[in-house]
Image (cartoon, rainbow, N blue to C red):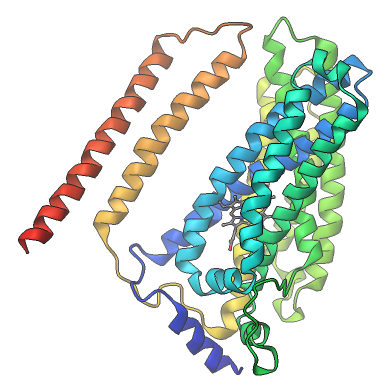
Amino acid sequence: MDHTSVSAMLHALQDPAGLPAPAWLFQYLNVLTWAFHIAFVNLALGTALLAIIAFMRRHHPGWAQLSVAMTGVAKVAVSMAIVLGVAPLLFTQTIYDPSWYTSNLLSAFWVIFFIFSLGIGYTLWFVFYFKNHDVAHAAQAKDATVWWATVALCILVFDGFIMHVLSYQGLFPQKWMQWYAPQGIPVMNGTGIHAFELPRFAFFMVMSLTMTGVFLLGYARYFRARSDVSADYLDLAHRIGVKTTYWGVALQLLTGVLWAYGLPSAMHVFAQPLFWLTALLIVGVALYARQVPVGGSALQAYAAMAFYALLALIVSVDREALRVAYLAPFHYDLASKPHVEWGAVVWFFATFIGVGGSLVAFYSTMLWKAGKVKGLYTADGAVSRLGSTAVFINFTWLAVFFAIGVWAYVRNIAA
Ligand code: HEM
C-alpha cells in the first residue's frame, strides 16, 4: 500500500464519534499513566525473580526473610500493574484506536490467551506465596516449591511479551493488510504474531532489576523504624539493592543500545537529545544508588526511587516519541474528528482527583504509618479524618453520578 492509501485507511479506522477532550491531553495522560504501569510491572517481575533466587538460598536466615518479603511485594505489585495497565489502555485505544484494535484483531488469540494466562500465572504465584509467606513456612518448604514461582514468573513475562507485540504491531500500518490477508487471502484465526523487537522488549524487562534495586534501598531504610527487624537483615537488603541496580543498569544500557541500533536509520536516534538524556539517567541511577550509605537518611534512600520514577517517565516519553516517528510518514492525526465535551472532561478530572486522589492519599498514608508499627496499628486523628473525607467524597460522587443519569434519562424521555 502506498502512503496515501495507508493514511486514508488510518483516518477511516478512527472512531467517528471523535474525542471528548483535546487529543494532547490524552497523549500526555497516556505517557504519564504508562510510566506508572511499567513501574509496577518492573517491581512485580524484579521482586518475583529476587524471591526465587532468595528462596534457593533460604538456609541463610537473611535470604529466607528476603524471599518471604519479596514474595509478598510481588503479590501486591502484580495487582497494581494490572490495575495501572487499564489507564494507558483507555488512552491508547482512544487516540491510537486504529493501531490498538487492528493489532488486537490480528493477534486475537493471544489477547484472549493473555487474560487466561495472567489469571493462571497470578494464581500460581499465590500458591508459592502460601508456601512461602513466613520464615517458618519457607524453612519447611521443599526445594520443588520454587517451580510454582518460576512457572508463574515465566507466564507473567510472556504476558509482557504479548503486550509488546500488541503495541509494536500497531506501529506498522503499511503491513497490516499483508498480515491480515497474505496473497490476498484473509487469515482469520488470530494466532499470528506478526512483529516483535526483542531488544525493545528485553529493555523493559531488565528495567525490572533497576526498579527492584532502588526499591530495596527504600525498603532497607523504611524498616529501620521497626525494632523487630534486624539491622543485619536490612544491611543485606541494602547491599543486594545496590548490586541489583548495577545489573539492571548494565543490562538496560546493553539492550537500549541494541534497540537504538535496530531502529530505522531515518530516525537518527543517536542525534536525538532524548536518547542521550535517557542514557544519562540510566547511568545516573547506578551512580546515585552507589553512594547511598547503608543506614543513611530517608531522603538519600527514597531519592533513589525518585530517580527511577524520572527514568520511567522519560522511557515513556521515548516510547511515545518513537510512535509519533513511526506514524509520521502517514500523517496520522490524533484528533482528526475532535468533538470536545467539556462536561465529560470536568467529570473525568473530578473523578480522577476527587475519588482516586482521596482514596490513594488515605490508603498510602495509612499503609505507610501502619508498616512502621509492630503488631496492631490504630489510626490517629489525621489519618481517620482522611479516611472519612475519602468515604464522603466517594458517596457524593456516587450521588452525583446517579443524579446525572436520572436527569439525562428524564430529559431524553421528555424529548
Ligand atoms: C504481568 C502482566 C503485564 C506485563 C508484564 C506487562 C508489560 C508491558 C510492557 C513490557 C509493555 C510495553 C510494550 C512495548 O511498548 O513494547 C506494556 C504496555 C502496555 N500494557 Fe502492559 N503488562 C502487563 C499487564 C497489563 C494489563 C493487565 C494491562 C491492561 C489492563 C496492560 C496494559 C498495557 C498497555 C495499555 C500498554 C501500552 C500500549 C500502548 O501504548 O499502545 N498491561 N505492558
